[in-house]
Length: 138
Image (cartoon, rainbow, N blue to C red; front, side, top):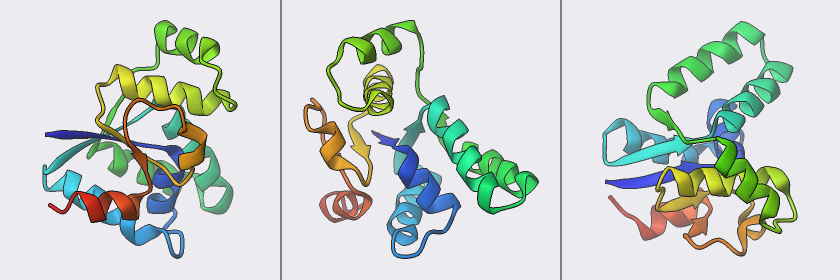
C-alpha cells in the first residue's frame, strides 16, 4: 500500500475546508479512509494545524477535528535522528526539513504539499494534491 505524507498545508486545507483547495485534499483522505493508501503526517503538523484552526474556530471544535483526522492518519517519526538530519540538511526552511526527514523515516513514498518548491532536493516525489490524484488514479 502506498504511504503518503501530508504536509501541514494539506491538513489545514482539509480540516479548514479552505476554498479552492479542500476538494483535492478531501479526495486523498477519502482514499485513506477506504484503505487504498496509508496517510502519515508529523506531530509537528498536527500541532501547527490545531494552532491555526483554533485561531479561526472554537478551540474545542478544532480539537475535535484533529481527533477525527487522527483516526485515518498515522503519525510519522519525529525523533533525535530526524531533527539532526534536518539541522544538517541545508534546507532553507527548517520546518520543511523536519517534515521531509520525518516522511523518510516513516518510509513514505510521496510528500503531498502546496509548497513543492520547498522540497526541491527531495529524493522521493513531492507534488500537490491535484497532481497526485491525476497521476495515481485509484
